[in-house]
Length: 410
Ligand SMILES: [Ca+2]
Ligand SMILES: [Ca+2]
Ligand SMILES: [Ca+2]
Ligand SMILES: [Ca+2]
Image (cartoon, rainbow, N blue to C red; front, top):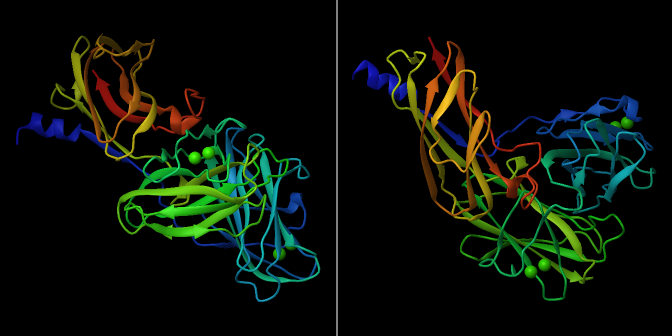
């Protein structure tokens, strides 16, 4: 193998983006924790275990907010308690008194904080106690997830018709919908791989003014057969489907319906949590420097030709817009040919697409010139508005990730 060829291979950067797979051991509460000031800090991926003991005990936990476009899902599982299983879970704003959401657990039912927006970046609180403060809960587990949700009140809206698994909307991180009439069903499709763990959580009252509907969640396998149903709460209560392990790669569909209370006020927020994190499709990037000098460098004046390949292998169309970005430092590199980019900025250019069809591969070649003796990188990124904040509303946080491709000039 020639030195140059080997150098080219080394310079090929291949990155697969997929969900975060994390499994962490549980942590145990530390008393005293009976006030917000004494709250235990929760971590995203490790459930906290505790007990309401003695009678009258209250346990506070704190979590860091991100911003108002992010929020939390939390589940209180009291099924391991040999005494009372009737718990109360409350999410509080950073003042420790403003209730964001409240739910109760009981035999066969977890309490669920579902897609509650943070009010900002300060610490927020979760509180556990027994429903009447008159019995013990010998054991509980508190699970907590942090997720981008979108603009409050404007989370990604359903698109009718979506009543069957074949007409399902592509699932966003969370979708806002309404079961507008008795026979309305709203289905959302995700692509999941074997052994991934997925749970589904539904907020039955996004406006916080009392939801009328008694929601049911159904989950279908890729062949369209019903796999599981969940209906634990009554009218106005948040729903969830316990975490399930995906048997094989494929498209899975979760559908929302209501046993009662349908109509224009039967709104909900519903979405999947995959491997403890938000649901997002996976892509692959490959960036190559096609004409590097042996030793991975350029001289001032060299023209550097790059090939960027983006591959999306999921079988679900992602509604657009979709943008593919390249970033660079203009003091180090100038653009000779931006590969017919749709927009040229001062330190970036981008290609724009209306949507992202299944099994898409995009290959772009572009040429830069080394302008000065310095170090720079070509970084790239994607913007999938559908997974950021909903249709056409890119915000300042980006779910897409930048990958730096080092380039040294001499
Ligand atoms: Ca306790
Ligand atoms: Ca306590
Ligand atoms: Ca609907
Ligand atoms: Ca529908």
